[in-house]
Length: 225
Image (cartoon, rainbow, N blue to C red; front, side, top):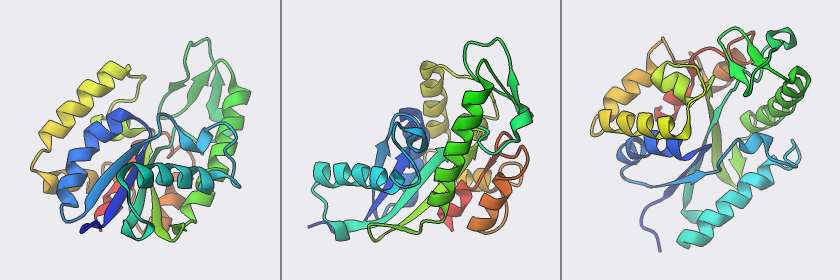
């Protein structure tokens, strides 16, 4: 039987866990913290839709439950962290360009396939709306938090396509910088230069406006309230 209650963090990649893992474990020291790395964007997975997203997240929870032999009542909360990737920008800010990979800027997205990105954004926005209005998954309190345009943009103030090696190096440096200094991290993430202000719902209303989902904003500070 577990003495400690379990907090599950769902993140997109290993670098997210590397950057935030030790900080979250230090802050939630009286709980057990488990990271679930979904290797990509769960809101855009094949066959994910508004109707299936909650069951997809529940599958991840079942994997954790099985791996660590948790019972349903062991779970305290689910904290889901996602990248915005310019999901809410106006269609006219998605520009046709001769680029290998999708390029993100604070005022536009450049891509070889504007129609595909428009469709992607529409699908992701619908799933995100469902998730931000969800307060429990299988009776476990759930909340979704965002980084815009992505985690690297928020943490390192750089908006470009990093290689996996670069992400790994940056996240290790970041974790080292805030090791034993969780208060400093909270101060950093709560600063007006990155924090979307207001209540949980207000921060989501904010990120949906204009080009905010490309600019450097997060509501991760609300995790610590």
